[in-house]
Amino acid sequence: MVEASKPLSAVVFGSTGACGRELVAQIAASPKWASVTTIGRRPLSPPPPESSPGKLKQITVNMDTLESNPQVKSALSGVDSVFCALGTTRAVAGSAEAFKKVDYEYVLAAGRAAKKAGVPHFGLVSAQGANANLWASDWKPFHGLLYAKTKGLAEESIKGHFTSVTIMRPGLLDRGDLDRPLEKVWGKFMSSVPVSKVAAALIADAENFAIGGASDEKVKIWNMKEICNFES
Image (cartoon, rainbow, N blue to C red; front, top):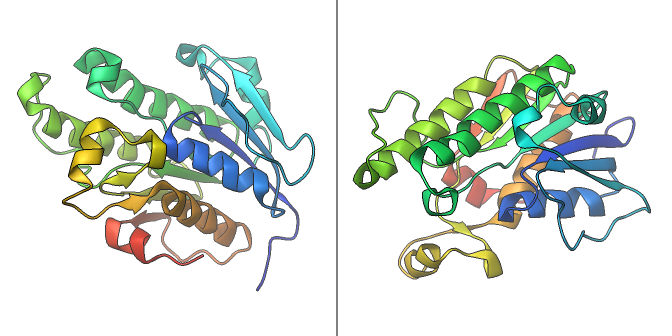
């Protein structure tokens, strides 16, 4: 198998969520990656095992300063891939506006910062049904539509700004011990995909791009079926 000519480097936004944790863990454990830096409002704790000492660096920032923060600018300089797994729920965020701030505005800011730094590949964890063109309302009964629209807007904010973009659109996630209450219920009746597989597919696509094996698609979108069928 062809490999990248040098070990790769990555930055992960949203490292404390289930997908973000898995991204960091897999990159930290892989000899194909020389370094991984997390950027967020709090560090990932406990940190995952590393394939070499000092491979993981964690930067705590005010998320409202992503585009102007010198630490963010420094961390993004020269990296091969940025992975973004930012996301919350309306219940956790406390309001529709707060939800949109995390799932759209922070993703937008992360993308802008990465573009300014010249990062070639951006990988985004989105969601099944994402559609920026949907009608949506902040009214709580219509939150499903708002969720899909917000995820779609986040995708659109990333497309066209990098040499390569990978977007994952998983359906119901199997987060293991981090499963949300409703996910535990729906998981009994619906198929789900482990967050480990979402992360593995996203990382594999970044590695494929790094060795020049990417397809002609500037934006590659993985749907639920493709993610589930992925074999590392």
